[in-house]
Length: 214
Image (cartoon, helix red, strand yellow):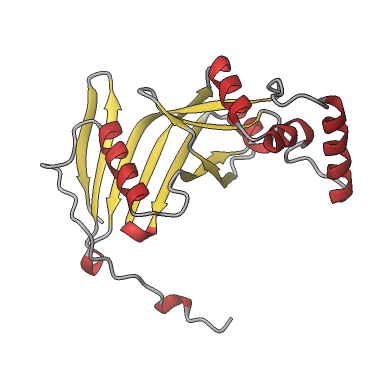
């Protein structure tokens, strides 16, 4: 490698994050930050890292897309036979991370995953481009395949099965999850690595804020 990784660093000089001015509901603060990320034209602001744990206790992670946010939590969609789905079935505790480097911001969300509403999952599936609907029916997600030709063959078979249909039924093996948060941490990069960190923790009395050392 020709790069000096150890010397790579970003000097943050963005807004401050103060516990006296932050919104008291973390969902409200998330909406505010998300809107700012959209206005700043952050590339794919709804991209988030989903961390789960497999049956051997080994952590796993991948990027998924936030597709809905309601008063309960954060929603994404996937194949229910995928590796991530099997890990979620074994251990529903998970973490989401949003990283908006252009703004020097990060949000970490810890909580518990549940199946999302079936009707809403169907509505979202049928709003996707037809090629994406075909792909969801065709791909045995996370399973080993010999080569891409096999995948193309499965796509062709699905095309034949649904020939003439613009809107496909939702596959029974596909749908949404919602992460219901117990903790949400907002991280704002500051100069000299003295970053601002505000963590919200939820209990039976509601949300509580704490400032964390960087």
